[in-house]
Image (cartoon, rainbow, N blue to C red; front, top):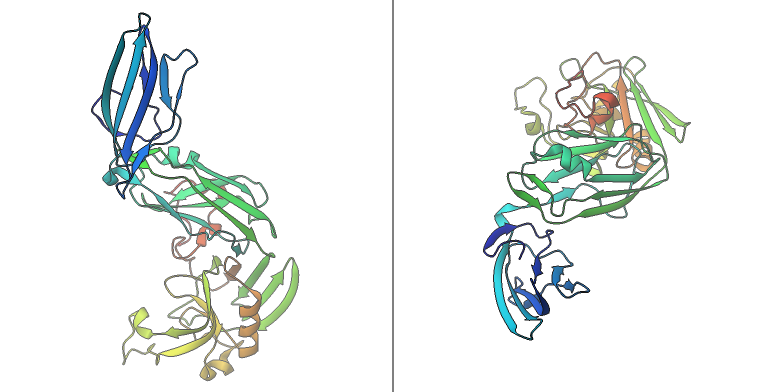
Length: 354
């Protein structure tokens, strides 16, 4: 019998076998109950000579199995027996969640983010379990931001209007500390047109390209001297026609020279969790658009321009800012991963201009 009777924390992908010495197996049954208490029988296969039986499917997690067998020797003498094994307990299961929605369409700058329920110590093994195809079929790499979170990106932006498939073959994989992956995860998504925006502090303008064609150039206002805009490539994370801006999110209180009254911004595209957005400027700032920087790090536009950006750009599209004299955003503050040279991307200790 493999494994030995009484084995606990058995990896459900491991094969359970019963072998008969000098006899033939006449029946083998491996049973447990599911979470609802219903009986479950594991599928198995008997060898051609009837001397060995083996499981042919992945077992249930955190389950106690009983294996009962019956055999008959060459003289017709019958024997029976049973043994028990227990699979990986719930406390030792690990799973992964992806930021990608099945069948969704994203911009060519979209990152694949993986969040694990347990700390990943066997990082190379997990990296090898990540398989991405499509999107230009180019080389890709993984960067770890913590033991719990990693991202995958290709060497260059995804090919526009292409299909991408990601598989994370985590089932049965030991990710470290005896934590075992409890399921494989797969997602499919599409990329849209290649949309790219370049905001230039020197000219106080932003240029918008779609599939290499310049479709709009308009004035902007960026972050003021105390709240300068970060430089580098960022990615649209989410969008909303209306978004409530609260100065408390920037730790600004009344009396602070940079305090502003809370307001509902219009045609908003978020670039970082910390609070960098593309949005319609307040009416009081219209006269500064294209002339001076008065925002708290955001890219502000006049109403028609903000609406055009909102209607044209989508989650995953690239927005790059240059010439502010300020560093880049931390790559984990949004998807600043494109600012990391690809040959350094897998080196989590490498630090750029942030």
